Amino acid sequence: GAVVSQHPSRVICKSGTSVKIECRSLDFQATTMFWYRQFPKQSLMLMATSNEGSKATYEQGVEKDKFLINHASLTLSTLTVTSAHPEDSSFYICSASSNIGQGRTGSYNEQFFGPGTRLTVL
Amino acid sequence: GEDVEQSLFLSVREGDSSVINCTYTDSSSTYLYWYKQEPGAGLQLLTYIFSNMDMKQDQRLTVLLNKKDKHLSLRIADTQTGDSAIYFCAERRGSARQLTFGSGTQLTVLP
Image (cartoon, rainbow over all chains, first blue to last red):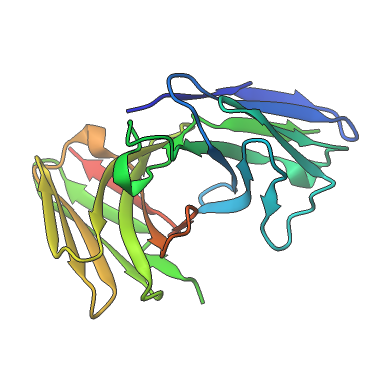
């Protein structure tokens, strides 16, 4: 399947600082990227959907000014956690899908997931 | 309540079959997926089934879909210790691209 990377894999930061997480599709063009948040031993909660070149669509309850998403190219989306606080500590996972041709995502528009980023805010 | 529900834990002995169950509520589900998550890692797509199918088999994996009861199951034959992980079912509704995930089932394979 297609490969999605995230960077960094782990980050520890002080309260009040901002942290940027990158999500890259390495071998396909991702027209849509999704950002999820996962608390320990819980499911993935969709935070936002971003389409290349347009503003992200945030899920209810997700602060768009706190979680800034940029999808500037077909291979890169970034999530910036601004003024991070301990309650923002979580596992952040991105996924990418494509509607360009049939390619790897085929007709079922599979989402390919990144390995996740563990954020710890002290 | 949750849109997609799973039992939280399942333990099986190595070599036995595992059956992980999932129920969903939205009748507009078009695709249903099973993902595997190992500790500290992202999600790996195991298999998926289109909503007009009843069953899909892929090597050791068998997916059964009862659309009337909105029940999905994943059977893993000859379960191995490497199958120990969290398994998530997920649904895709209509033409939407986003997925709704269940709470995940922690599968523990005992030697």
